[in-house]
Length: 301
Image (cartoon, rainbow, N blue to C red; front, side):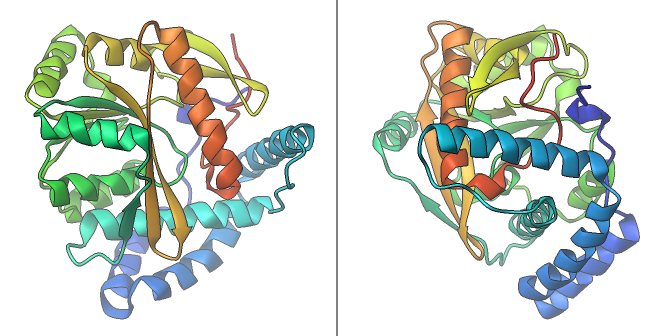
């Protein structure tokens, strides 16, 4: 039975616990927080059977695809997988909330990145389709450094405790957070105007809409069927601007590398398939950073 992401309960968060970890971070630094979080994540994983099941299914699909392609097999436990996610949340907290963050960003400067740079240098805007592969939320620190305004869409009903923590401590300067629940024709027009002003729009393309879970595009990733949200790809086309898939992958310690891929926008199916291919390529490079702990690799309709 498919468990959609918006039905997965928030685990491991609590206002007191979050504030305690924030105090530890401010006093003892990020490495100390990660030490505590790694221990906490094991207790969380014990009570999070759906997450462990989703992790095991993902690993099975990944290993089968690696075997088919004669690639090296990835070896990690569901506990280690959940622990990696917990540490990524710490990096997210550091990047978003601390002006003196230790998170370091590097860029994969390929042809697509240079094309994106050319768009910005000529005053153009762009639409980013992100995912929960790597640590995309930490990218909110980059618009502050680059001086570019970015509109990021998030589901405010999910992970309410962590989002409340972010609201209390975030140092957002050039990032505007919009609830996905407010997307309508007027919002689409507003985002069109934003990209025409040279601003950026970012929305996740790997999770179905809670309001329209049957509006999907069927695609494949790692050789397995998956369902992508039709509304996100339609929204991107309505903005009538260059569209890029984007991911922010942890390379070592608190170091991250940003990857982008320009998507063909001739139709939403082509766009979605290229996006899925982008995810697949990065999953094979960073298999432990797929942080969708629900039944992603199955078409529910």
